[in-house]
Amino acid sequence: MAQLVIRGGTVVDGTGRPPRQADVAVDDGRIVEVGEVTGTGHREIDAEGLLVTPGFVDLHTHFDGQATWDPLLAPSSVHGVTTVAMGNCGVGFAPARPDRHDWLIGLLEGVEDIPGTALAEGLTWGWESFPEYLDQLAAMRRAVDVAAHVPHAALRTFVMGERGADHTEAPTEGELAGMARLTREALEAGAIGFATSRTEVHRTKDGANIGTLTATEAELLTLAQALREHGSGVIQLISDCYQSTDTEYVAAELDLIEALARTAGRPVSFTVQQAVTAPDRWRLLLDRAASLTAAGHDVKGQVAPRPIGVLLGLEATANPFLLCGGYGEVGGLPAAERAAALADPDRRARILAEHADLEANLPPGLLRQIVCGFDVMFEMADPVDYDLDASASFAAEASRTGVRPAELVYDALLRRDGAQLLYLALFNFVHGDLDDVHEMVTSPHSLFGLSDAGAHCGAICDASSTTSFLTVWGRDRTAEQRLPIEAVVHELTQRTAAHVGWFDRGVVAPGLLADLNVIDLDALGCAPPRIAHDLPAGGRRLVQDSSGYRWTIKAGVPTFADGEHTGELPGRLIRGSTGTPV
Ligand SMILES: [Zn+2]
Image (tube, rainbow, N blue to C red; front, side, top):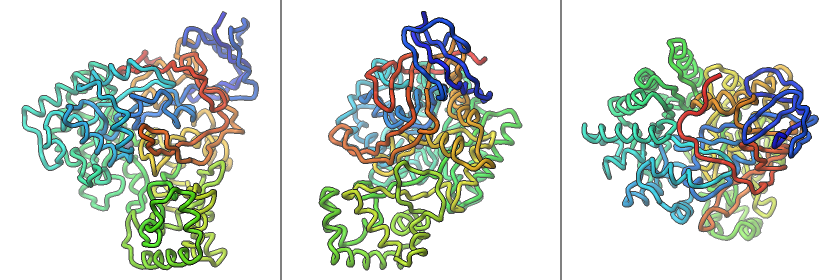
């Protein structure tokens, strides 16, 4: 008798094939039968009217610290994800010498906005080498499977000490050989690849550039060669090529990506998002990925299926009035008290006057966007509609009502006792709609990614982009732009899994891992993100609930039922690639 039978569902099997009615039988953690299952299971799930999909695979998370203390890894796990990869963008906590712990915490605090106090309290540092870190991860049970890239920034300072944190310093020949040896050792132990950052955006807590920013081609190709020699692993990187206005720089970065793919002979993915500074660049980047693919390399642009936005609010890291003196006077109060103080009409008038000054004087850039980017600023509804349109922005509402946008925003922030969050669509929204995102997600040269789950704890909450990929593109779009549900599920499952060589998951087929979602597509949605203080030491983070995931099943064991954890922790560490291609 099968351990579990999911009966009568619409199976969207992950391969991109059209949905079909079928039962799914599971035994011993694996799928044993897909079709008409005649015998009854020890346990039966009625999936009539529901979708049955593989569990989702999110390759771009930053749970490196959290995975050592938190078995649930929400919000990813409540958005259908059953496998996550960490160590992205070159940041992580191994290898780590004991005297570099504080520095690594400062790096993650700066680059990924993860509270340093939470990391300091939560991390046990029972490791020094990368293989020891993997052993530590392997010793713990979780709701999802985890895997990790070797993070370049950690590797560099492990070998080069203080100099490794300085991007203008190059490793000596001996140091470079050491980094290559440790990369091979990490791959041998089960690292899924190597990740690095080449963006000015990534800075330590003290504002210093990340040590890997300008790592030379010689350094990177030596590490790529380690992947070739080991014959495994992927390369993941972020560079400023998606946003820089310096065309020579962009060309050089793309040449470097090509050299990495050639040297490693392994899959490469890099960040592709639409920036205001270079609205059409993403096309150039995906075109380059296309020509490299045509030349026999595996290079893909990691894209997000929705705008990438920063959340603004009284409890979030940023809000539009942060720089106003009148705000600063009450900025230290708890949110509800602060909201009450801000409701005082005199204070409101003063802050709005100070804000008008800022609006007149702030130069273009991120800060100006946060303070007065009203044309891309939205109030978050419940459930959140990520299919944004400029007509719903504060700027549009202001021109309809004749009220200053700053006033509308001010009053919105005070709602729900100061808990209301606003969404600032910084990327993928240059033309005020999602037409360009449609092109990105349907490109054969893109790869679902960029959720950054586990990071940007006070500003970004894109772990839920699995859910909005399904709702926006598989359900809610007009017929012209709606994607077949099987195409969306394929992007979230087999396609991402295959990129890193996981062939034991991502498809509903006999013999594969029983990582499954049972989904009520009509009810699927994202609640608004909310601030929780549940990291170690009371650290703050954004969390986000979902609706419509009736069951999430990991290795045959139900882990979440209607968004609630069942108490089961069947998740493991994944070492390297798994299974064999079908
Ligand atoms: Zn990242």
